[in-house]
Length: 232
Image 1: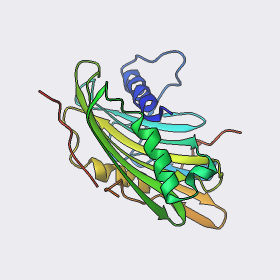
Image 2 (image 1 turned 90 degrees about the horizontal axis):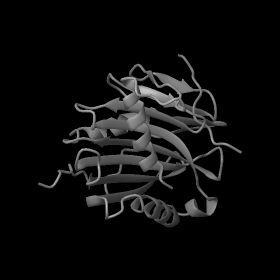
Image 3 (image 1 turned 180 degrees about the vertical axis):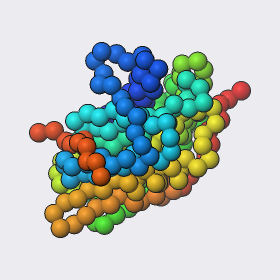
Image 4 (image 1 turned 90 degrees about the vertical axis):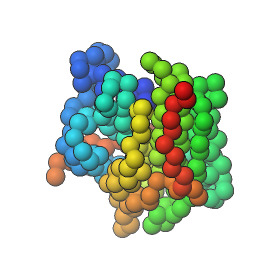
């Protein structure tokens, strides 16, 4: 899986489209209000990130929110998406952690990313198995020169489908990573809820610390905190 690489590439397109560089194949992103509600399908309710300047691009399997930074190279992205999760891989905390560790560490090859830091943790929020993840590194092949990036993620077993997982990701690429990025991610994650039968699952776990108008939401188809700094 190349979820985060694709998300970052998509974010570049989203932010570029704000200034008119949208390709014909891409659905046009649109501005969103802080905390704007999305939901209705797949039992999923999502609220847009807080703060101004966000745009959203919607697809059948993903909600992607993007916000340009101080320069064209700097971006913040927040996504809610589904991914294939074999039931056997989330049968225990050990297997789920190992599965997500393998997927995520493979997405930071040493040839591109310097000073990588990965932190994983396991928890169960209202009975749902989740893996918390934090990563930071220097992307040495970023357009225009090396650029720090940091990402918080929450991967949970999707309670309505045993063969799917729900991925919540909040990440930033910037010369200086926001000091409150963890809190921003936490607030975004709290705004995502899965309603299933009589039980409501609310993703209110904090990012990894070491160990009114309804719109279509994405649906599946048939602590270590360190501010990364670019090397001189």
